[in-house]
Image (cartoon, rainbow, N blue to C red; front, side, top):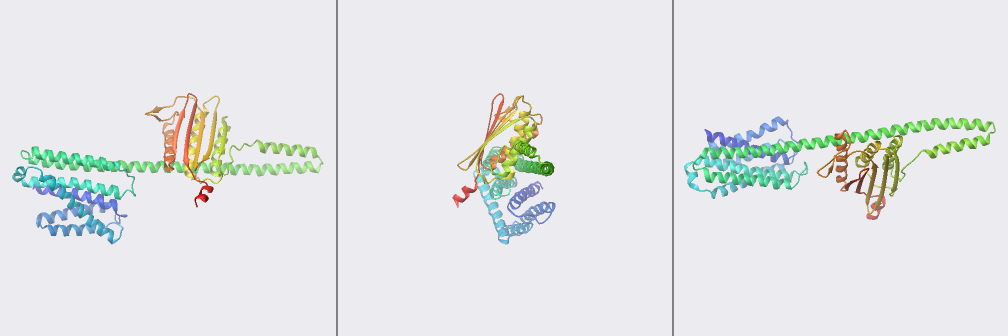
Length: 432
């Protein structure tokens, strides 16, 4: 009875491995997730029952392939892909069982001959452990387009599996002859723990990906909010200008009727002086960048912060508005907030373009103490979560564009240097 229970548990572990493989490589599932999960234990129960009741290798293999093909029907895909998955699973199962038999062939035979059922179960669970490693390798490498993957993860997985296999073999050689049931249960527990570790890692990875997407969505919403604010202020400025222009024209018409030419000239000079007093910090021919800088520096000027710009960049830079907001927008926001508390508040922005690289240097005054942990800047503001998120979002945007991000600071000055590989229209034409 114990043998049957342990055998069917091994079949459920086999079903879990197959579930991860087929689900990781196939297309979208056609049924609800609950029904999808319930179908895989059916595979384990069917193949296990065929093996126990008839014990015919050919019948077991055929029934396994039929049920495997039925499982592939749960997902979108071509017939050739379904057949490939069936043969892939069967090949990996045969490979894992062969490796397990080779490993067990090095163990002493006298212990197994006296406890054959426990030895068989131990070998089955050892093959399931090897099977899990093979299946996970295929899923990680083959499904890397669907999820974030790094090859060092395979190294960690290999070390875990190799350590577990070594531990099981050593326990088998040293203790199995005296405590076969204990050794068999130990192999079951080890496999269960490895499955739990892999499942927990996947859950944490999914939560991280969801949080990352949520952060990116929040940042995108903030970008749209800033753009909407800019548009509203521009609309209000146009409305005021239209109203002021009408009043100026009425006043000039009245002065002209009265023949007050000197007053007309004086009035026009006042209008021109007012127009020239409206400061435009940057006008490079790149409207997205010019708009961001002029808007942020207008806010800074209202707060009494002295601003200056040295921009030597060509027209027609191929800028992504979302990435620009994530980098330049956050940099200017942080500089503006840091400079507010200073008696002599200032912000300096320098932009240059050379050899398809945009160099952005932003310096600002600040008061207070920077928090640095393990060489990483945290924040100097009360709202650490938002400011830390702003710095992290900048880094992610820079890394996405394959750029570099450097920070320098003294007792009263904070400087950020960003280098981004960006094309402009002349580069595109020369490459074409």
